[in-house]
Image 1 (cartoon, one colour):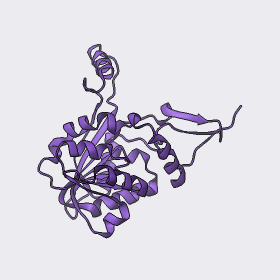
Image 2 (cartoon, rainbow, N blue to C red):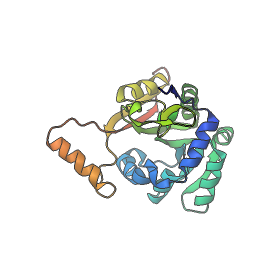
Image 3 (cartoon, helix red, strand yellow):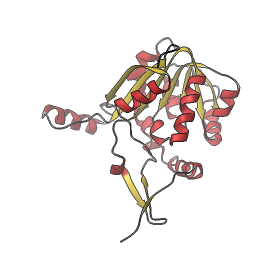
Image 4 (cartoon, rainbow, N blue to C red):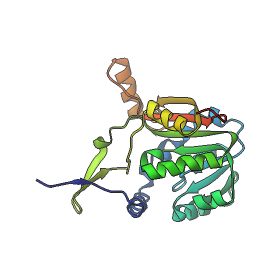
Amino acid sequence: MIETRMLEWTPERVAKFWDYCSRFPEEYFTRQFGDVMVDRLGAHLKGRRSTLDYGCGTGFMTEHLLDKGYKVTGLDFSRESVRGVDQKFKGRDGFEGAFFVDDVLAQKKRFDAILIFEVIEHLTDEQLEVTMRNLKTLLEPGGVVIMTTPNDERLSDLNIFCPGCDSVFHRWQHVRSWSVQSLSALMKGNGFQVERAFTTNFSLSYRRSFRATLKASIRKALGRPYKDPHLACVCTLAPAGKG
């Protein structure tokens, strides 16, 4: 019997993994359904002057936001990703640049909407702590943070095995699972006020996935067990003295 172990995700391994995955942009969730996500969450962006795409990666969500007419700044922890997004959208109306996280913090930039889409499921404890601190630093008074992540994901369902190192890892490098309750508790515990936390299915769009839409509709109609695969949370900073 092969002895396996869970892969330890170091920064170097994460960077190598996503450098490889970037060769297959059609697989990215935000490329496939980012426009649907912006449509469904757009009410919380109404009237916002500055939008930060936190963890912009290769820029798929940035592009969807620009298509909808928002002013967007990209932020990432990879300087290579920052350069790519900056070059891709340079000169486009509404694009206010892409930056490495330390540069944004050093410039004391603030935003009245921060979108952190499909990011927090990838974060270690240390990275999560840093992210919470950054969100509070970067958010303008009265601003809003909107998060999305898989809903109550059973991580083992997408585990795969590497025969080269005998390690097991999640197919999309997810390291944690979130529910409405756990995500709400995280945000409240870090000084945010949860305005709305809910499950949904962003793939239920005939424009994007007829098969998924039809399958979910049939299961609901027949009364079969069904769980929304996606989770969204809308937060503001709690007034001083509240948590």
